[in-house]
Structure formats: structure tokens, C-alpha cells
Length: 458
Ligand SMILES: Cc1cc2nc3c(=O)[nH]c(=O)nc-3n(C[C@H](O)[C@H](O)[C@H](O)COP(=O)(O)OP(=O)(O)OC[C@H]3O[C@@H](n4cnc5c(N)ncnc54)[C@H](O)[C@@H]3O)c2cc1C
Image 1 (cartoon, rainbow, N blue to C red):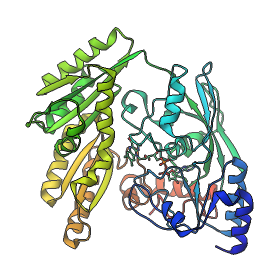
Image 2 (image 1 turned 120 degrees about the vertical axis):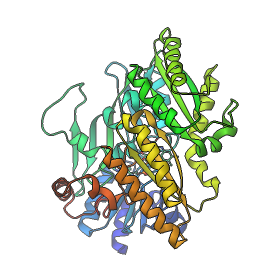
Image 3 (image 1 turned 30 degrees about the horizontal axis):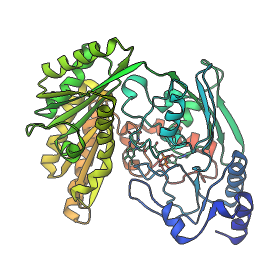
């Protein structure tokens, strides 16, 4: 980066928010995908005006800008692969207002998702999107990836809660999309276009979110099954019985092994699959809903069912679930390819059986878990990529996972997005014309291609 440009950025954000020390750069060079690339500098603006000035300058200089929240993304989407600036929004972290009359909140992008949830709960309100990373990830990152979570099965994903956005475009201009009203149909829906755009169209600096009244009560249970088929059949059967759980999380045998020490219940040797199911609603409905869930579980072959006896026990079930993804590394495989496929819920039994076959055929260990209520599975291929032959088998297995998913009418990413890791597969899902339109939109928003260049498109 030219010294004159560095001086100008320094003047915009001040020395405490402009990092160039190699140790600092390393901290902003990677995300949870383990892909890494050093930026030339890290910039941490504290206002929309600063973001606007930075982008205007970067645009004039043709300097790449990679927006970043907490860096918990799993696809390399925030990794500054073209060097340039890592634009970290974490310091824009104010909850500006919570409006209990309109059921809305206005927040800056760096607000941590779990902190917003806690804050709105003080008002008896509820912000449902709950990515498992919510203790760390930011609302800005959630908006840019269209993040989901366990509760999406009943309440939808981040996209369903974003009412309006303030966005800085690549030339530094600021636009406002959407409305603060419950309805609004004036013009094209740029808000929905920007949600999930992975920092390639603009930098989100303000977000108006829809809130709900907090449900009166909830109930949680875990059920163990002798195989993945009976667990996935249970998920389908729940919906057939017109039960709408707020979460229905699936864990396979390897996943159960990883969290068993943290679960406050005994686990049978025969447990090859687990469901963590939660219901909510008015107090009186909870025992009835849990009874109906138990009935479906038993009908499909559950061997053990444990209803949480207290809030603490339910919390322990969830803490174990949230600890799962990070603990996969402890299995000792040097590498992990993490896919987050999603199929129509009724196809869950079929995709699970296909995953098992793909693993066996390619001799790759596959660990699967995820938001089964949505048909969304995190498929982790565990392998050693330094072994050439194993790498080739892994590559073949990934391709087969994608093909099997699409053949069932699914999508190659239910919530993590494309970023870098899924770029090679986007053409399998989006047709040529659709991709052309998307690239045209990117060009319109960012003619100089400075915003997160190299991401999403192959
Ligand atoms: C243990 C673990 C569990 C996870 N569980 C889930 C889950 O249940 N559901 C789920 O959906 N995801 C999950 N994820 C993935 C990840 O947490 C989400 O994608 C999250 O939304 C990323 O937020 P972040 O703040 O870390 O964003 P980052 O990783 O920093 O960035 C993600 C993308 O958003 C862009 N971006 C960030 N902020 C802005 C902004 N203000 N304006 C424009 N673009 C921006 C970046 O350029 C990048 O493209 C998990 C990750 C981990 C490590």
C-alpha cells in the first residue's frame, strides 16, 4: 500500500484503529475455514462516516477491501485474499435502540448476536436467529451471510428479521434500504438482495431488526436412536404429526462421542444418532407438545429419551451441542472439509444414507450434525490433505455430496454461504443466465471490484 494512502487512512480512523504490525495483521488473516492471507492493513472504523471515507479512498486507489465481523465464517469469505484492507466492523458495536412498541431494534454491525439476544430479553422480547457461534459472531456477519441456526425451523433465518439497512457502497455513498414499518413494497427489495451478499455489494453499517415477544415457556429433550435412519425418520414424522418444534438438531455417532462427556445423562452404547428437540409456546402447551414429540421418537425407534428436568439441564444440553463444532479438531484428523448442505426435510433419510455410502466408497470419515429440522446438515469430511491420494478421494467425496444434495432438490449451502470454499460448485446450482445476472449486479454495485474481490464467483 502506498505510504500516502496509509497516511490518509490513518487520518480517517486514528492510530488506535489502523494496524500494520505483522502480528496484528496475522490475527485478521483467517476465519474458521483455516484459509489465510495477510491484509496490508487492518482498519477498524467506528462510524458510517469513517467507513464511507475509507471506501471512497479505496475506490480511488483500486485497493481491495474485505469486510469482517468476528471472523467466525467457515468459507473464507472474510479472508483478504487480495491483500488490501481488512475492514473490521467489530468496533461499531452499539445497540442504538430497542423499541418495544414497534418490536424493532436498531443496531450497528459489530454487535455480538448473543449480546443482542440477552439485551432484548430484558424487555421480554426475542431475537430468534441463533447461529451456534452466537457468543462471538456479529449481526453484520449474520446479515452478510444470511445466517441461520437451530431455531430457524420454527422462526426462520436472519433474512426474515432484517427490515432495513444502512449500507456504504464501494464509492463511499451511503444508501438506506427497506422500511421500519411492518410492511413496505416500494421499489425492488434491495434489503433481501444485500442479505447474504457476503460483503461483495456493500458494507452494512446499520441494521433495523424485527423482534418478537418472547415465548412464554419452552421444553427440551434429547433422544437417542440405534441408527441415523430412525433419527431422520423422526424429524419427518414430527412434521407429519403437525408438531412444529422450535429446534430439531441431529448428531451422528462420532458427534455424540465428542460431546458425551458434557451431556448430563447416561448414553447407551447402542446410540448411533441423537436428536436435540425443543418446543416453545404458552406454558400449558409444553407438556402436551413434549408428549407428542416423545411419541414420534418412540414410533421411529428411539431407545432413550431424556426430557430436561430444569432450565440448567436444558442449558447443559445446548452447551454440549454448541461445543461440538470446535471439538471436531480433537479427533486428530489434520484437516476438515466442512459442507453445509440442505435438502427438503422429507429427503433427510435419503441424504443421510447417501452420505454414509459416499464415506464408505471413498474411505473418508464423515461426521455429520446439524439443523435437521430444516434439512440442513453440516457434513464434515475428516482427512489428511497432505496425503495426495487421500486428498483426491476427499475431492471426489465432496463432489458426490454436492451431486447427491442437488439431485434431491437441495442446495449446496443452507447457511454458511459460498465465500472461497464453495466457489467451484456454484455453477452446479445456479444456471448460466442466473450467474450472469448476479455478476451484472456485482458490477453495478461495485464497478471497480474492490469489495471482497475473488469471493463467491469462480
Ligand atoms: C463453531 C461455529 C458454529 C457456527 N454455527 C453456525 C450456525 O449455526 N449457523 C450459521 O449460519 N453459521 C454458523 N457458523 C458460521 C458463522 O458463525 C456465520 O457465518 C456468521 O454469520 C459469521 O459472522 P461473523 O461476524 O464472524 O462474520 P465474518 O466471518 O467476519 O464474515 C462473514 C462474511 O460477512 C461479511 N461481513 C461481515 N461483516 C460485514 C458488514 N458489516 N458488511 C458487509 N459484509 C460483512 C464478510 O466479508 C464475510 O463475507 C458457525 C461458525 C462456527 C465457527
